[in-house]
Image (cartoon, rainbow, N blue to C red; front, side):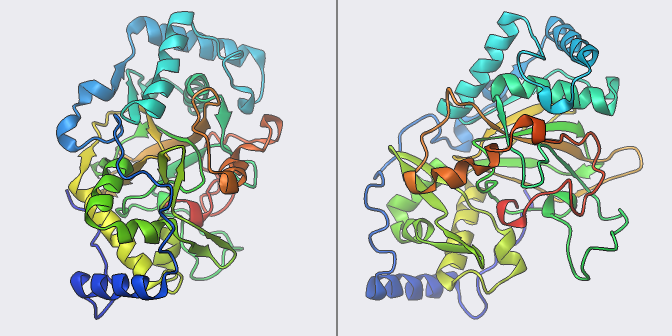
Length: 380
């Protein structure tokens, strides 16, 4: 596995930095009591290590009959002449048995190992619009509510857009979002984005682009045992932007939620304190040591618990005939959704307040620099 280098602040070794940080915490107590009420140990299927997981545990194979039913639902939706955001179980109708199996996927994500992969679709068979209908239609049976950003965009295309023309209204020095570049990423959860992260593998890179998952519950247990000071840092306030200040680690009813991204701090090294830099790198190291490589095939639909699982990808390289292209949705299933912390439930849920008639589901990535991308403080 070739992950991006773990970066500690200049002039400090990890050991020296840890000593300085932890002694500072004890002397100033800014976050000393932030773990009050947090569990001492988590014990659930989410607390897995690589040795616990095999592809058979998370792969759900779609049969020939399932594919026929999905294609029939797609054709039926097309005949309704409805806008794409109208996709939901009542407009993308599946046989009861298949719909019930998709409901089980939500249970696996929320109360099982935290992720699942639906396998059997062939995106090469379908047009761009048909792929979008099939993906969003299936996803609606797993999570009826869809994330939409402040512009109403309810789906994101993940691909290398570095060769796209840069619009004239984009400021000099402005960078594409990490999801639009080909570099590797660090372990993260898409912050305040959704309960469930869903990805549809429309295209695979010629080289690289592997995906990795790590349980933040396993990382929590290890930190509670070995370095609870890091948990205190994560549970304290972080400055994600000049206007956005809140914790990275939450607890509600004994369920731990880690919402950690790197992008704001990589763009502006002054945002994170030395203690927070250390916490970021410690989580990264533990994630690398306790991750699995997700078995990925063309046509897979991946569902990931975005509150309890960290994800990343390796750098990749496209070729003229093989280009990496994933479609991303943020989903919520009210019947399985975790109760959110009272102080932050509105912030967690703000991505789901835009009604479907105000949403846009972009069939193509028509504006990688703006309309069809998302806020840096929430991803990567």
